[in-house]
Length: 103
Image (cartoon, rainbow, N blue to C red; front, top):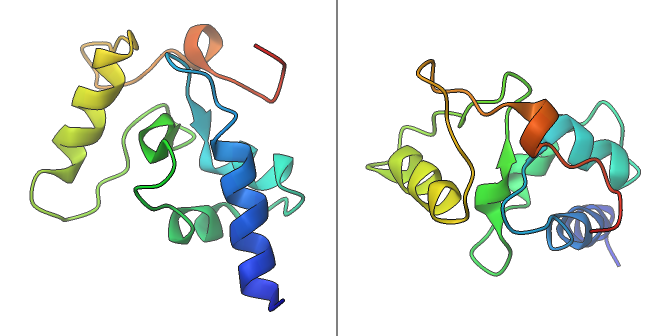
């Protein structure tokens, strides 16, 4: 198995555990996957086979992707799960954040 495949599997195994209605930051996913300080790598491991919408940036915001409507899609999917955004476009990480605990 290549290193990049191993990282992808580790990251995706964390993301699938994020409960519906909760979010996790890129950095926290990296830490939980065993790759602390590799938050940027997490974004490269996202695909439609996992609940990618539950991973947001450390500010509690949806990270801009520059892809037509994907930022809105992520927010829409999170809101459909019950995640609330403040007027500043941020999710309250103390309320909705997940750091690996069992749901």
